[in-house]
Image 1 (tube, rainbow, N blue to C red):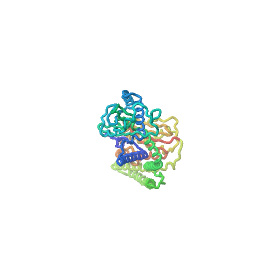
Image 2: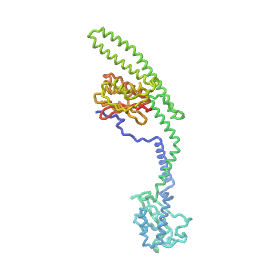
Image 3: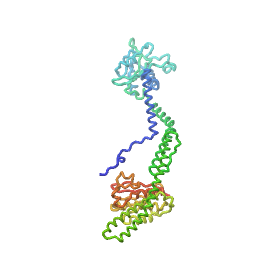
Image 4: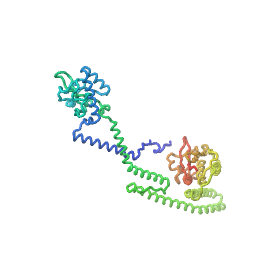
Length: 492
């Protein structure tokens, strides 16, 4: 059973750009520093939750206390419960009024934990706090003057169950005679934010977002320079891997990335020289092999004329091997010359339909080939290079897949490109062989290629010929079976 390679079965990973990672870790660093700073301040200065009432949360609880004080002073004591319930419903929080001795006077019954009791005890004099008459020290709307000192406020956390208590001592008393006590308003919630009453997270979210934006702008020149250098090096590496040894990476930086760019440029230059030297050696060796092979074939012809019938079988086998060797040398020469096609050939206008029919008649005259070409299609490219590329692909398809069904040659125009697609219904190649299919001397099945006389250079020549025309070539497997070779050429 055929299995896909690991690279095709793995799930794609979420790609996070380097710039995003740096900003993310920067924000994590700030959060860690904030937590450590808060823990240090709390340990050194015994900071509790009262700091949450130093800002907008404190203003809200003081405003609530003022509102309740004004309303309750104008009403008899019997109607205070209804007012408290109305505000409790509006806020979605638990409200209660406690006396200065720590006992609850009005509101939803609460179990006062021991740690909350000291906060509730108020030592003020109840006789100085009217219950229903306006205070002479207040403004006409019965609100304290602007220069009035802030009322004592507190906030704490209790456990079992976890609740958060916030309170403020009111300028209001409750009761008659000796039972008359100054009141303290308590707001209780099961969350530290108090549904936004104690703590509003939106300003902090805005602060974090603003800090992220400002940090991004501050870090943009540094991180942008790093990512650009890495991106250029990555693109250059891909081009070098594809055989573009003339690529160079800007190396003006005076840091490690600059050194990396210099190393990549040196590597590209050395690889280019090495590959060029290897190509010259291959071409020279192939060229030099032509003469001895030709002489051997001539000598073999003479021997065949003078040989005995018993030697005929051996001479025929020797002739087959010489022909195979000559074909291999011919393809090596074609592969070596493919790089110089742009220098040796000038682009010409080609009427594609008769051009393709001539290639079919030469390379696959007996194959069932179906053409789908736009009427009157003309191309302006290197004729010899395109001829060799299409011919090699058709010859391979006819050799390995002609018995499986028709071969389709389709041409289409898309996004300023001419796309030539040749598909067959043969067995195709193993999935892991696709990335190496256009490498020189690579054969997915060595035994099959040897049996049919293949050298492993056919598709490598196709790639070089299409590159000489300024295009690209790729291969993909079809379902349930078959192989497609797609050649993309610039539309001129």
